[in-house]
Length: 258
Image 1 (cartoon, one colour):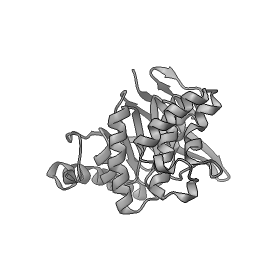
Image 2 (cartoon, helix red, strand yellow; image 1 turned 90 degrees about the vertical axis):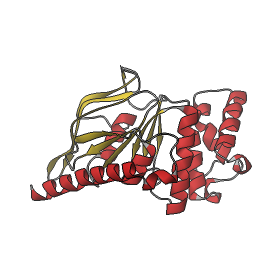
Image 3 (cartoon, helix red, strand yellow; image 1 turned 135 degrees about the vertical axis):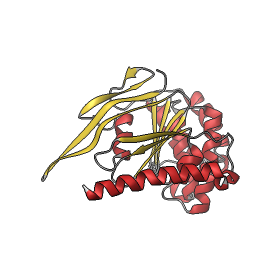
Image 4 (cartoon, one colour; image 1 turned 180 degrees about the horizontal axis):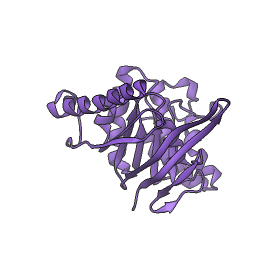
């Protein structure tokens, strides 16, 4: 299939007290150009799963494919955006956006064309010569997203990218990301602990159980796009939130009792 798929992935970490099974036989499929969110209690393996999808961590067993081809470590077909902005502090905004292209040997003219387009789209044109420390948190994350998109990845992997933002900036960033997704139509896997964020952004929400992480339920989000803040108060939104929260709380309770 096109998009990204996880096939029966398990992850076991060795520790001084013995092995810890972080993820257990996880399989999921995210179709091409769709937006999937992954939620679950803290420590359920969400970030580990995303790192495996990125090729940053090799699973103990199982595999990940992009457009049907097995991944072999990190690759330009997958862009990663973390909660921390991970911009290079010694590079200016434009230089950060062009960094991956420069590593690939892309011509200066083409790098300029790509960064010009992304700077305009991200609302960062007047900050192209600024260093990351001179930007707000929201602007830094926009620059990080632009840098990921500059390599034209098939899949964008996002690990709680708005977790460090204040509530107002976060709401703005969520709306902005939906606009970016509508424009570029990349396949997105988005990890978050915020249920409302998952529903607002996603076409599908994967709910994970506590460690060892498993896919407890796959929930389609059938709210019409484009979405707005009005959707947050709709009965359909409220029912989805109640359902997902109930699944997470039930899982937490079962894990505590075990």
